[in-house]
Length: 253
Image (cartoon, rainbow, N blue to C red; front, side, top):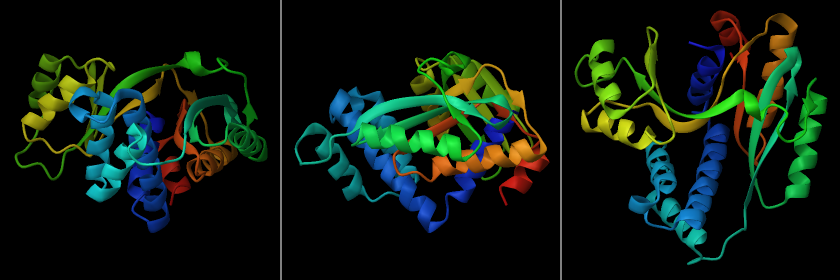
């Protein structure tokens, strides 16, 4: 399993802190608002909104917050006008980085993203400079522990392949299911229908290839990625690094 996948798992576990939880709720509210604005307020007819609501509920967001975010997106309530934009660049070790931003001020956002790159041994690139290195995929993370019944790789493979999944990876702690954007919904539904506990499910930008990073460059890269994660306008950060699992864990303690 790639270092980037492990980093995503570590981020979710660190998200239990109050500050990280506050940032998570802000990001989820933005995502619900934009999803409702672009595809309507009915989750049954809007897959992006449906996923955002599911993620918000799994994160214990109050139902009233979800409802208000939908109403702001549909115009039933007044709200901030958000724009979506993706910035691209390179980090230490030549690692390619995508930064997905949702902001009410594009000029401020681009200036601050550029500053974060330059302050942390990175370089902001032009549109398209690294985006071609990533493909959009559905990622469903399933923990081995905490399932109602023991879950084997063979059992899970039968469920997800029938629903159209592309791949299954696993380690001692979890399974990671990969789908296309088109098959994400049916695969997620097939897993849910079997009563399988899902830790995380989302559409993500997955790197085609990874760059091995160690030592000082790995440390600098983590500082750069953490700086993006802590920025209020940043929704998601993707990077094509591969750091040894033990080194990655030590850098995130």
